[in-house]
Length: 114
Length: 117
Image 1: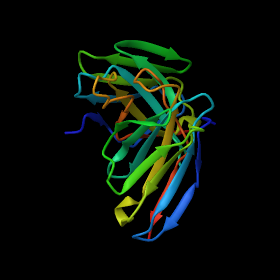
Image 2: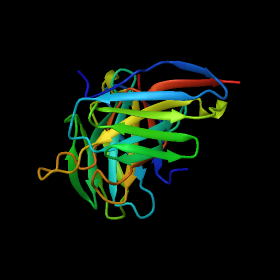
Image 3: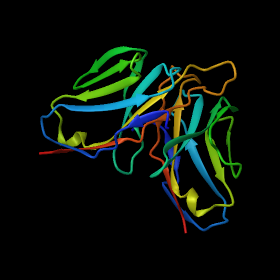
């Protein structure tokens, strides 16, 4: 068990809808990262937060947004969903931002768009 | 061309074999190198974490980094059926002043490994 908790485990919804994915980092970790995993693209970095502030952005669509709350949990919001958004969404956390900090991953949320 | 290339396999070996997994990369800024193991329906689990060139050993696992060749490897000795999983290499560059690479991991496609009894 990595200590990173993601909910829900599985989400099924329709095109055009909006969903919120939740992540609780490991105890003591201040930085949260979101990644998307699909069969064709592999694991892709989306966005990073540290202590409530956005620190880095990857290839995150404008329809997607995230935030980190004072209690350090993070939410990833996906709106105007398209079939191509079906993927596994992972959250990872580390003690601090920076490449010298190992990242530990949760078990992900599987998003299925019908 | 992808920044990180990894042979997706699949790789099938008998129990007890030595397994060699490899990745090549093109970005010379990468300084931190990781190997993750991912079981079906689970998140990536950190196996090995190394900085710059050299070797690191942890039990049956050895990670090697050759920055001059932009090549990293993971060796698994005495492989077990429980090692059957997808192995992902990942790497990152030091945070820069612009803040665009603060710990961002770039992953290979993953190699599917099956160890059969």
